[in-house]
Length: 497
Ligand code: NAD
Image (cartoon, rainbow, N blue to C red; front, side):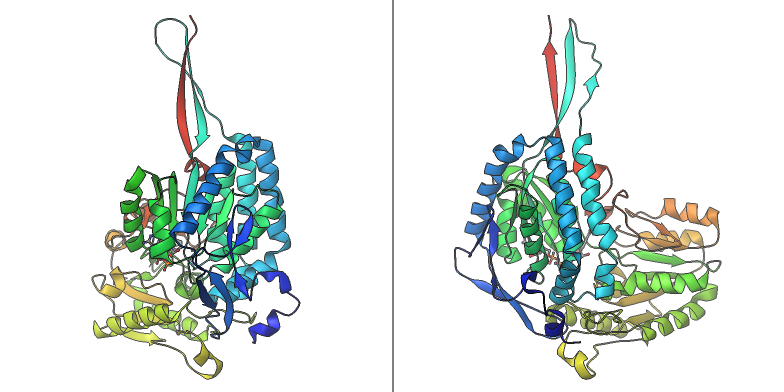
């Protein structure tokens, strides 16, 4: 499918020409005048030039966010903030098809995958909207002499620097903007250079929703320049970072500048455990999409398939058939199930890991490399790949590949499955497929990850907290505690005679 065709009648989509930085409510060029290209990873087509923000642009954006925090935004009542967020949610709903198409064109997501996130994207904003009016402190009993009254206030931390990856632009941007607005903070968001267009469009919609200029600033740019400047900035109070563990470590280092608060949503190597007593039809489809959806470019993808030995061969065979049957193509085609990888760099990384696995002795029972037939030759397509005969110590079982690659590992007992599940540095997601409630509860407790899915994989909801154990980071997105990430507690102690 030609993406140019799919853009007809959509002139306001935020595509083409030069897309500018969004600072203090205005679209501006980068001070350096520099731009970078963003291309469709399915076709190689140029989508837009994007102003490349640098350290000076980050300075301007942070100053705008500070003025808005100290000024107009601080005078918005909780109900007024809520009204803005709900209006923003309505606008995202009205423009949802365009925003989904931006994810398709800029990062390659299948349109079916992008559309399936409708409820989540809009629901998240309404959930955060609802929370604006329920932020409160407590009155505290104390045993101090005299008549002393003590209570707490929950106050916004201030200016937030948000840094996002490219793999789910719409939802990861909303996951940052929503709770920041609910808390009363202001922000500068630096989207990933591989897919910056959706965040810019959301920034424009935030302005249209009546959110004052300077509250939401969007500054695309290179990670090691604009991202690093934001993470180290002396006037940023908190960094909310989503990305790789390697970059997460740099963000922690940079945060030392002014002891800023940090939350980190990092990578994973999530186990998905299939017991012999599971419904295998459900498990093949659920575990299959748990690793192949969005071409494996999901932080919590269940990439390590731990399979009970008696069903290992059968499960690998069925999963391999499932993988071979998936429709790989341009995400703009509604029939596509698996789109391209986001960039030539990711293509090289993923195919490199497949080669490492084969070199380590794994066997590709499905896929095994790049797809170049017909129109696929223009993009960065990798066949959904199943590697069998994998040992948990191999690099492909320990390092995040971030592509459509499943590693199948056998186990004999629930205890061994739990030990294997926990034997990586990461702890983001985990899955269990079983017909036994007892086994399900045992595994849910034994697996050291921020989420455990039982007889399903990857389900998310605004009310359900999401985040990492171990090297997958700290802090939680979604759930009641998400807005807490952007609040701090002040104690007030009052002597009343
Ligand atoms: P990345 O770490 O390369 O980049 C993430 C962001 O950090 C980008 O905006 C990038 O420009 C910026 N950046 C790069 N260098 C920086 C620096 N020195 N200082 C500050 N910012 C810098 O990650 P990626 O390739 O964009 O995304 C894939 C990774 O994100 C995977 O590891 C994936 O698991 C993770 N991820 C995690 C979650 C989660 O919720 N836990 C969600 C999505 C993606």
